Amino acid sequence: MRDCIRKWFGVLLASSVVVTFAHAGEIASLTSGFPEPAPPPNGEAQWVAQSMRMNGLPMTIKAFKTSADVDDVIYFYEHWWRAKGKADYTRSQRGEWSILGIKTAEHYITVQARPTLGGSEGTIAVSGDPGKVKRVATRFPHPKSATVVTLQEYEDFGIRSEHITLLSGRAPNIEAREFAEMLTRSGWKLVMDQRAKKTQGHVIEAQKNAQHAHLSFLPGRELGATTAVTVVWKKS
Image (cartoon, rainbow, N blue to C red; front, side, top):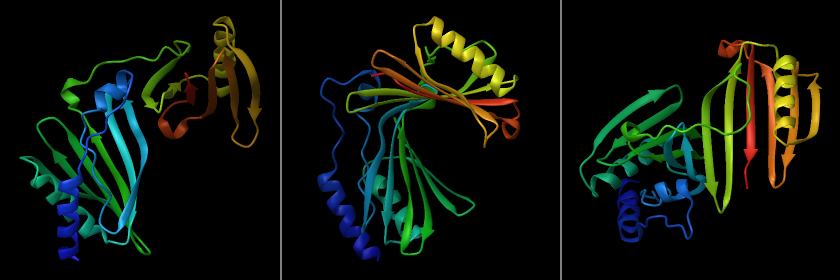
């Protein structure tokens, strides 16, 4: 299997490309120079996020499946970067996941793999330097009672969106009512505004011109808060 990996490794070096974007937006421009790891040997990879930003940190994410086992996948990606330049490597285990961290001068590459019935599967994330993160804030209307804990910004194929997670100390129905009133005042039209009986939460869908937002309000006891709010905001 190692011989097979070396052959794949040679092909990768010969065909490695960098993602480029025509008329790229801000986030796409930030990730356009990121290295694009190829699929593992005997496998395939698909984009999960070709251009995103997590709490200000630009990154790309791919998911992969392969008939190769976990050790061979980790070995493959470790030696893929060793041939490209100097880097620091760390290996760790988290439950069933084997994790390889590659720290280069400009990027952080994280490969996570776990065994499957026919081989292994996992993800490959490439990010910028966390020390150079640009602080960003969402412009989606939300009351002061709800605090943003994660902000994921996506910019793929001309579509811009945000996935926002907020925590609140107020009950789901109270927080939902406040959000609904604020959205209405901001010019949004409520398409749906109803309680979710099965989850003891609340759901809101709203639209403003070409923008669309889906809001879920759930009990957030597991997160140390009364309510967890998830917003999926399609901006364009």
